[in-house]
Length: 480
Ligand code: DAH
Image 1 (cartoon, helix red, strand yellow):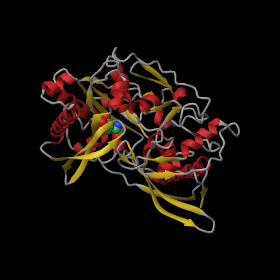
Image 2 (cartoon, rainbow, N blue to C red):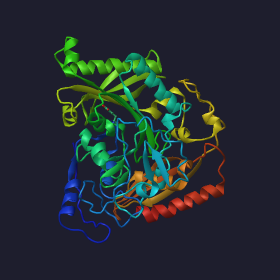
Image 3 (cartoon, protein in one colour):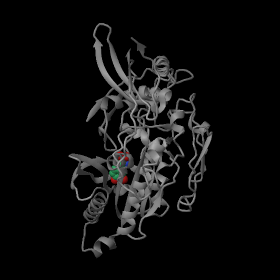
Image 4 (spheres, helix red, strand yellow):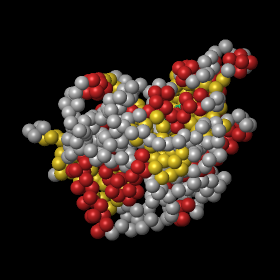
């Protein structure tokens, strides 16, 4: 258990706010971080702690953003016409809109417009344009794309093992309520994943889903008991070969009735579901990776108990394949399935595809370069990617005195906002505190590299100069 104490001296835009909202914020900040894992991802505690203060990019006057509804009073809601679930989410496929130039995209029957999702002057919003452009791309619905090939292989496994049992959804809009993303799956109010540092907020009550678990409750309420939900998920994060602010997950969910476990001679629904879960997922892992050694590791997720991670021994290393568990009773009860037991799992498609197809950098999934896209064919899982000529990286360092609210995720957002996919990595290479000044200095090394061409010195210098400028204006740090 990690204790965190912060004093609240800050103001919201538009003047000093006093009274209940500020007290509520203080309460939010004076909290304990009981679960140093964000949905199973080891999370850097320091990073997350500082995030609870000011994490809003581009609004240096905003010192504190709290997350709970009602704390930030003015927030506009997103005009997304949600398609009635169960009634055709599969029918309405989003086209391959190149959102870079579009001001609105269509996903699952919803129109999502840029102005609703990116609002620089709204302190309750932290979605950058670079992230909006990914909405509606639907990489996982392209049959020739590694993510689509992997998704289809998993579909096949479920269809063969359980004919016509699992219903599949891969076109649900990624804009969901805070309630669906967090509350409905029992994420504690003080969980780090709720912070503005880790999650993209469209407004105080609406987020870009940070996991496909966000759809569990609505699926149950719509009457589904066996489903696979695949989609793009969004997280503020570091910049390196395996992290990208958008990636893809598949959620699996299966409900059992007492008749089912009793017919199998079991009186313990939880034990029965856990056993079925393990058998199902071991079969899936064998389908994807062949005859590999596997192990189950106990872990924690807010939505399951017991919870596990499945690891396989692959290419000389233990690789985490997915998280899963037996669904907390409250989720079933709150959504019309009292008296049943369920299992659930969530897996990251990029993570597995990188290993299965030998893809060395997560940015490649997004490239339109035919030297990448032409290497993969529908139905061919595990074709090994052949790297095409690699262009050299260029490294640039930047040092500054950090302020109290500085976070690495915010720095990465600035870098991505300027360099986009040319930013390959941002690494902290030096850190020290000057005890006299009471100031801490960070030095980051930024690697710029294009997957497609050589970058000129001029171009990189221009990017770096913009990074230096924006780091000062947006992050409130002092360059050294
Ligand atoms: N939502 C989790 C994540 O994003 C993954 C997950 C773990 C999903 C366990 C589940 C589950 O349904 O039971 O890391």
